[in-house]
Image (cartoon, rainbow, N blue to C red):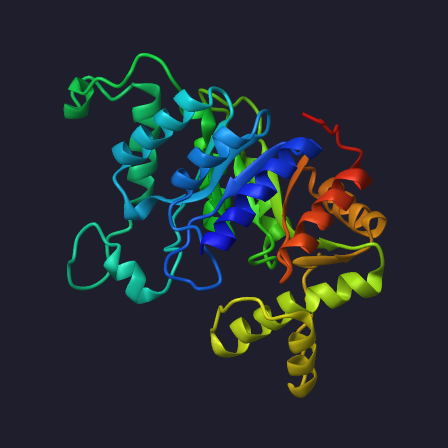
Length: 324
């Protein structure tokens, strides 16, 4: 884990210098392939290492926590890094069933009640300091300074999140890299059914997609074999393990009948190629879905290849680089 977290910090510093707009950290629990169970802690460190990039959670898994605790954490982050913090929230467990049970706020028999909508309302009320007059929490005084509900994003990979984000008038981040089956339907519904809210007069959506860039297609495909094996293991055996070296991944994929599994969605969940080809594919997707921003997730076995992929992509998109 220390090496993975150090790599995440180095990536954030590079993204800041390259001119990327946002850096988001996810929340996952007890998965040996992912090393971020507490994004708010990682973001606090990254805030001190960066200068201009927006920092956010992608996202906080709200059902595990009280809304007040989440609000307090992000008040602190905003105080340390004013105007640069995004709070993305989701309702997935971020781990397996046993981990989800261990993280429960209440250890009751059976399924926990789905009170995500109520939690979301309460979280907005803490940020906007506007509980109803007869609500007991109105007597709790939040700081008169700090963020408001405009920092909140709703994350998801289903129509439920699309419907909720549109109805609540919230910015929406769709995890295409996780599940691209409903991408167009979710984004189209969000744009067409968006209800203006206190903080957002028009819809704002972004798509999260995986991408790997390299100077040649052959090298990019070589690097991508690690991710393709990880996806194959997940789809066939439900195993989400660490990335294997490309050479080992290629050998294993050759031994598996029918591997690697390919996308059958409108757009691939993993875009692989040269900087120009990846830029063209991402730009076409963004234009087709009428989104002005893409969040790129890059996974490679060699952390140096991941950094180089982001460098190549930044150059292809003409991002404004800072040398300080």
